[in-house]
Image (cartoon, rainbow, N blue to C red; front, top):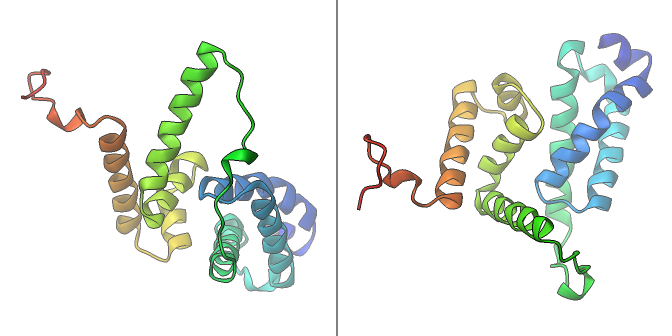
Length: 175
C-alpha cells in the first residue's frame, strides 16, 4: 500500500471509493453529499499522503479522513427533511412491498441506534472492517469497539423482534 500512497494514487482511489461511499450512505448521507465527501476525503488524503506512515493501514487512514469530513460537514450544514412529495411511488408488487417493508424496518431500526453504535455496526457488517480497524477509526480500544457492535446487535434485535428477549431456555415464550 505504501507504493499506492506515493505512486499510483488512482489505484488507491479505485480500491476504496465504493466502501467510503457506502459508509457515508449507511450513516444517513444522501447520494450527492456522500459522493462529495468521498472526493473531499481523497483530496485531503492526497495532500497528506506523507502522514500515512504505515501503508498497510491506508484503509483505516482513509476512513478516518472520511469520517472527519463527515463530522465537519455535520457541524457546518443544516439538515433538512426530504419532502414526501419528492419520493417516487414504488411499484405495487407484493414481493416488492414485503422487501420494501423489511428494508424500511431495518432502516428505521438502524436510525434508532445512537450514532456511535450505528457507525460501529455499519463498519463491521456493511463494510467488513475488523474490530482493530473500527477501534482505530473511532479512537477507542478494541474491547470498546466490540462492545459497541454487540450493543448495536442487541438493540437491533430488540427493535426488530421485541419478543426475542422473552424466549425461555426450553425454547418457548415466557408470558
